[in-house]
Structures are given as C-alpha cells and as structure tokens.
Amino acid sequence: MCGIIGYLGNKDAYPILMKGLHRLEYRGYDSAGIALLQSDKINIYKCQGKVCELEKYCEDKNLSGITGIAHTRWATHGEPNDVNAHPHFSSDGRTALIHNGIIENYQALKTELINRGYVFQSDTDTEVLIHLIEDIKKVGNNELPEAVRLALSQVVGTYAIIVMSVDDPNTLVVARKGSPLIIGFGQNEYYIASDGSALVEYTDKVVYLKNEEMAVLTKGDDIRIKTIKNKNRPHYIEKLEMTLSELEKGGYEHFMLKEIFEQPRSVADSMRGRLNSVKEIVALGGIVEYEEHLLRARRIIIVACGTSYHAGLVAEYMFEDLIRIPVEVEYASEFRYRNPIIYSDDVVIAISQSGETADTLAAIELARQKGATVLGICNVVGSSIARATHAGSYTHAGPEIGVASTKAFTAQVTVLTLMALCMAKRKGKISKTRYATIINELESIPRKIKTILDSNDLMKEIAAYMKQFNNALYLGRNYNYPVALEGALKLKEISYIHAEGYPAAEMKHGPIALIDEDMPVVVIATTNGTYDKVVSNIQEVKTRKGKIISIVTQGDTDVRNLSDYVIEIPETEEMLVPLLATVPLQLLAYHVAVMRGRNVDQPRNLAKSVTVE
Ligand code: F6R
Figure (cartoon, rainbow, N blue to C red):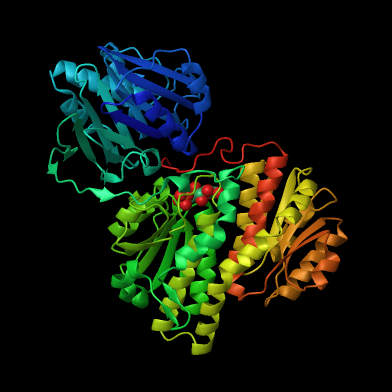
C-alpha cells in the first residue's frame, strides 16, 4: 500500500524516481507525485491516477535536480485526487514528505496544529506529519533529523517516510515503523525505496531499516541510524537478492500470465535443496533449530490473509492428516482482535507472500507476546514478517508483481508440504512407503503443471463462455475446498465477477437456491475419497439447470458426462491436487478478466502489499 522512493546523489533524480514509481506501482495506483530539489526550492508535481498520468503531466516541466522523492498512492485517508496525492509540503514550502502507512492519531494532532495556525490543504493523515515536523523544527530551532525524530515519537500508527528540505539540501531523512523501507548504496549516492525492485539496477548493496529506526543520509557522509527513542544503531550492509529480468514481463502480455507460466520453475525452486527423492530426504534448513518446537507442539495455528490464508487451509488438512497435530487456520485480521487462546507450546505459522501484511504482522506480535513459537513462510527476502518471526522458510518463488497472487500460492503449498513431510517422518507418523510415494509425486509436480499450462487455449474457450455471467460458484470438498475458495477469489478480484467458493456439500444448506441457467458452477471433482459425493452434488446442480465447468482427473468419464466444459489434470496424490487444480483456475480468471477489458495486473481498489489494517 503506497510505494515510496527517494534519491540523493549526483545523477538526474527524475528518471530514477520515475522508473522506481513504475516498479512500485503494484503497491497502489490512485495517484502519484514527485518532489525535486531545484536550486533553493522544492518543486512538486503530482496528480490523480496512475504513474503514466504523472509522466504525461511532467512532460513539459523543468525536471532537473539531483535530489528527489516520489510516491505512488493507495488511498486511505482522503479520496484519490490531486491535492491528496503525495508529496506533501510544509506551510513555507521548504520541506516535503512522502509516507506509506497510517497515522492513527492524526485527528488529535491536526486539531492541535490548526489551533496553532497551520492551514491544511489535503484530507490526508500524512499532511499532519509534515506540519508537525515543521512546527518542531521552528519552535525548538531543531535540525531536520531531530525534528523528524521528535515528530515521530508523537505519532501512533505505521509509517515509512522520506523527508527532504531546502534547508538541508544534502540530506534525506528516512524512518520506518510497520511499513517497509530499504536503503541502497551507490557511488556517493543513496537510493531509498519501499522494496528492492526500485533499486535493483543501481546497486545490490542495501540496508533494510528495522522497525522504529530512522536514518540520516547525507551526501559524502556515512549513513547514521538511530531509533526513534534516540539510541544509535549499527548498520549491516546486505546483498540484494534480485535480478532485473525477474521484474520484466519477458514477452508476456501481463505479469500475472508470466507468473502463472513460471510455476513449473517456481515450484521446483521452492523444493530445490530441500527435497531429495533418491535419498528420500526432506529438509527445511530455515526451521531446523525450531523443529523440536514443532514436534512438541500442542497445536499449530496458521495465520494469514487472502490467498495465503487459502494455502494455510490446505496445510491444515495436510498437517492433521500427516502429523496428527491439531491445526487452526485463522484470518490474521480476526485473530489479532479476538483475544485468542495461545499457549506457549503452540507453534504459530504466519504465511505471507509480501512479508509486509499489517494484519499478519500484528498477529505475529500477539503470538510472540503470549510466548508461542512463530515461524514464517514468506516470499520476499528480508521482509518485515521474515524478521519478526523466530525462524522460517522462504518460498523462493521470485518477485510476484501481478496484484493477484498465483505462483506465491503454489510455492507456499509446496513449502508447507515439505514441512508436513519432514515432521511426519520425525514424529514417526508416516509409513516408509507413503512417505516415498508423496516425495516422488511432489517431485513430479513441476512437470505436471507444465502439461496443465498446455491447456491454455481450452481455458480461453471456457473464459469466453464464463465472461457473460455476473456470478459464479466454485465447489470442492476436502483438499479441493481451499482450491474452490482460491479459484473464486482469483475470478472476483481481477474480473469483478461476483464469485463464491463453497464446500460442495454445503450447497444444500443455502446456496443451491442461487442455481439457475445463469449460474456457472466450477467444480473441482478430482478422483479422491469424496469423488462419488461430489458427483451427486454436480447432479443436484445439473437438475436445477446450473452450468457445470469441472476440473477432473485425466481419463474421468462420469463427471465429463455431466459437465458443460471439462478440464483434465494429471493424476496425483490427493493432498497435492491443490498444486495442480489451482493452475487452470488462475488461467480461467486471467482470460475472463482480459476478455472483460480489466486491468489484470492492477485491479481496481487493490494493492499488492497490504501494509495498512
Ligand atoms: C489475492 C491476493 C491477496 C493476498 C493477501 C495477503 O490474489 O493477492 O489476497 O494474498 O493480501 O498478502 P500476503 O500473502 O502478501 O500477506
């Protein structure tokens, strides 16, 4: 939610900032803006809409300047318009600020500042911060860094900010709490951004600023880091693990399509070095030190949001089946506010692609306060969640840029499967034969995904049929229930067709009333223990004139005979079906969205990284 970028050095700042904004646009695209330090003035260019609108707006402007900051917004406080766009500036126009996060106590601070004579231009919470800094700077005659620090110590909420001032032209002040911020080091220059994608072509030397830390970046000087409570902190330069090609569409029309097609590779990468089918070894290095906690756990609680929550549901079925430990899966947003019972011998697993989801982070904090062991499954290396957990495993899916999560889901399920297998073996809960069968099957998943991707044309044909409807139901049972939820989420978020995922047997408890000839029903009906029951559920839909689109195991005839459209997937172990069955549903959602003329990679109202509640 909101992307921020800053540059301080000797090059022209505008092209660096503009390219960075394009890279960070997945974080929000309600408005965009740039502030450049030009001679003894800050000039701000900002407007409602996407980054390309800003680019057009800037075409005839003077864009010189070697210091600047830029922002792409996902609106929280104040509607998306030109005035509410960042950067925001002080009353005297000498200081400018960009912000990702939410200032929760902004109303109280605003009232106080208005009483002191400040006039507000926008409806944002952010503008409070710049006037507060201005006030502290003036009243206490403070330098910019100290004014920023004192202002932040009055703030309740989350922030990643970059501040620049005419009064201190060789310095940028940056700080973070809750929202991410990374500082890159060039030749006598600093690059700052919400994530590494905006810096990757300039440097691979970075510092991930920690929570409640601020940094003073001065040209020609060493970085100075301290906490908001004014304690000096050392800094550790890390290598940015990212390549430029991962951030490009590579010939695909959309990032989402590229990411769907990357899954044979990304699933293989998430297993690499962790699975050896010949020696029958499964090992997750990242959690080795905490394996004993998992083995002794009274209970496993999985916390996540959205698609990651669906991966958690698959894990629940798998862990209970293989390890025989009770598992609860919770939306992190509910968990954090409902006073849950957490024992010190519980293990909490937080799943997150971005590693920045505010609700998941808060759930982790709560679990840690109650003494539980917290493990993370994240995609983004160095992310807040990866740092906030005791230990964890990265999914190694590579950057996911399309707002709708695809390859992250299959990578999460793969890592969770490895975890389940590893624990089942150590606990002695799985027979040698079953263990070997699942390992072998898991290894064949990338190849099987490839064959599913070959049915892309069929998915287009089904999409051409689906696109005319305004509602859809997705049904599945057992391991296929989370797949139904995920399929429905994909369709609704990018095509804006209303879609519901349901356990197939729950139909008769209400949703069956919705069935008529205008209701397409997507059923995941692969051969498994509940196959016959699902066939009956399909018949119930058919009797009421519903249209059936089914996902079946290769060679199936019974469901085929009942279906309007059929998608075959290769046979595999029941618990691994989600890794295959989700893929055609991603393609289906993608093609429906394209055919309905939607912005697939940047669906309305959404952002990739949900750093606000
Ligand atoms: C759906 C989607 C979201 C995310 C959710 C959690 O396609 O992308 O539902 O899954 O916002 O995000 P992470 O996994 O980054 O915590």
